[in-house]
Image 1 (cartoon, helix red, strand yellow):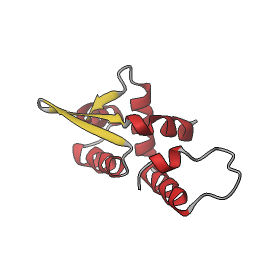
Image 2: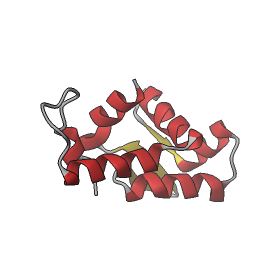
Image 3: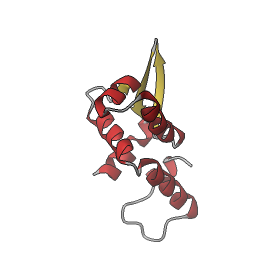
Length: 107
């Protein structure tokens, strides 16, 4: 499940969530329900370019590479993050189609 279904959910729905919308929302909540992953998202949202390398994220959060990779994998699997290999570095950013959803959730 990915966020586009959730992105169409009104903050004040006129009725209950559809099952697919509820499952998509639950998946997103599971993916972000960790302090480290919330920190990653806030760092990316606060970045001037909206992106950071895996190494920068690890250093900023004081984490080892395997630990940050674990957290990034969860966010990638839910479609919240995108990754781009540039040379020897992997750059992470919030998926364009999920950015407003994440901003709204972190408000």
